[in-house]
Length: 444
Image (cartoon, rainbow, N blue to C red; front, side, top):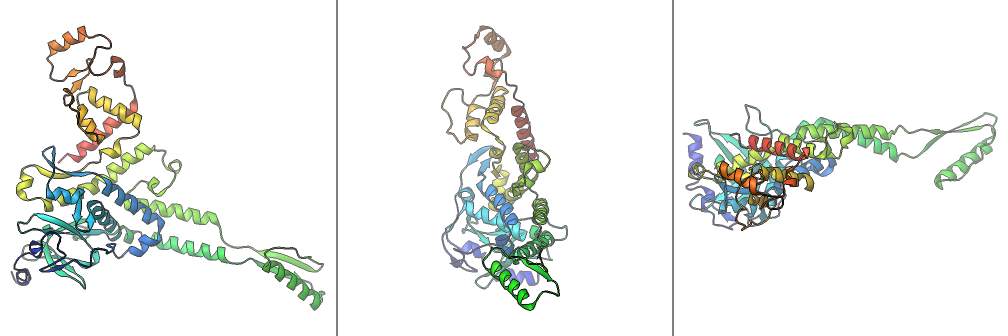
């Protein structure tokens, strides 16, 4: 196995497997200086000094880290120490929200984000530590084509297999393993915008300039007197100067045009939105200047085209590297809940829920779970209903007809028949959108 075999033998046991929960130091690693570190990458200067980039990365990071993520077995939610790392405490100095937020910021600035998985003696994950992308070198073992991560800085140096590093990234060329940074793609547009801003500020800072013309017949004393009066007026920020015969005073106009700066900002926002694959309205561009989409349509576009690929990548990393082969074979997996982003306003959400109830798609407790409400103990809270007016979906046809003939208005256990006349197109559209998103998320 050559060189790589020798390197692997440097660790008689994996360094992370010698760490006990809560320790900052151990064989092959040292994290005592990480508690208050800023894990932004090499593009920190752009993030700090460009409001468009800061805004779009903030929205992406905050949206992703705010999404609920749970561990499931088949379709039932379960709670394990591994799931607590993703919705509770990621490590002794960081919450799960902070971890995912920093990973997403790093992914959008450097193109790559890393977190080291600290494991106990049995190989179970006990902590997740974010790592500065500048400290990571991705290496490929030419013997078996496996990927390894070399973590190296002035404080720590260790080598781990790819299943011990959470690695999320932007798109990667076929011949590479590292993601492409959106800020590298935007280097030209951002540089041009900065040049326009600097020129505009320089023009705005310039003092007013004037051209004074006079005839040859004007005496030197009169000429100097007018110049002195004019200087006094400029110094005192106002006043009047008597323009005598033989003098002509003209203002030298500045080249600053506010419309040029506005046009440049608009073009830059469009390019930033394209590079980060987000709707233009995320950069505070008015919807009226776009294609006329409503806020609900914009959010649906964001969820389908931007958020689903991102959360799917995170889920794939978590499922592969935080779960064992046996756990995955038992149907255990991690999944983000993005349904909350598709709820819409209260009226459309209410109509949407009634559509689900009346067509046997969801029970009352299913919808209570979506609204973060405790499950009901009512007898029929877990039953599926269909219109007729409503009765359990497993009711025999004969019993349905019998019940239909005996029920009178107001006698129904669920809702009045008048409530079934839901013609709200928004409810149907929202149901269609949610079903389409659900199918795409569960296609594989």
